[in-house]
Length: 125
Picture 1 (tube, helix red, strand yellow):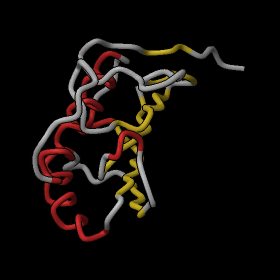
Picture 2: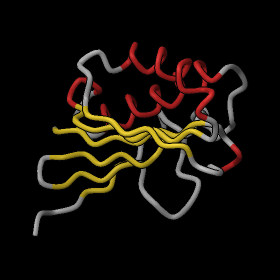
Picture 3: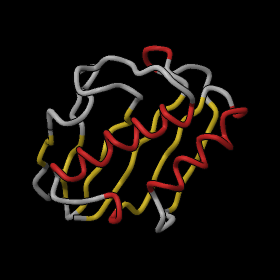
Picture 4: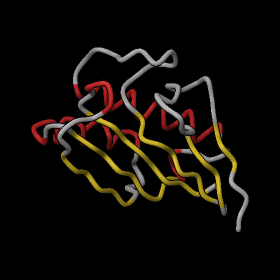
């Protein structure tokens, strides 16, 4: 079995529970879902576009702390509490993932701390 390395950086939202921001294993980085919160864990105000940007900013910081980067992301999972936010989320998301990794986007009933969007990712190192 490959060695597992937990990743924690102060440059992204801290975990809201007993989990790692990311885990490195077998040349991959598995990043936990990121919510629109700052480095102190405070939720940000703003539009769904601004909240999507904060999720992506957190992903970027965690990936860089892992020795990877946004351009090495191979799969993304996006969770929205309202698909009416899809177009605005998508417009902002496209600014961060210009290489178009594989992606799923699903509507969910509820997300932690009542946020409208959460984004997770898998990248290569």
